Length: 99
Image (cartoon, rainbow, N blue to C red):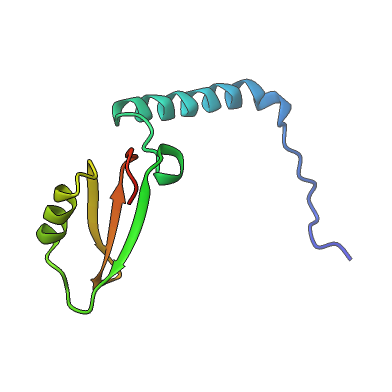
């Protein structure tokens, strides 16, 4: 019993030049896009630093957290809400001191 009656033949090797040029164009577009957007954005695991998740009973004021981090001089830090309003994510760049 035959399910497919026609024989399908694809000339893959005949299309290799076109496929090579298409692949090179896609790679070049990707490299240009990375360069135009300021390079690769490394996460904590490659760039170094610390990631701290904080949970509060009441929704905190982000400016108060930012002021508190400035007083202990941790350097540049990114503060963002995640999940619910009570969860805060703090990313601190690599620093010489301990947290």
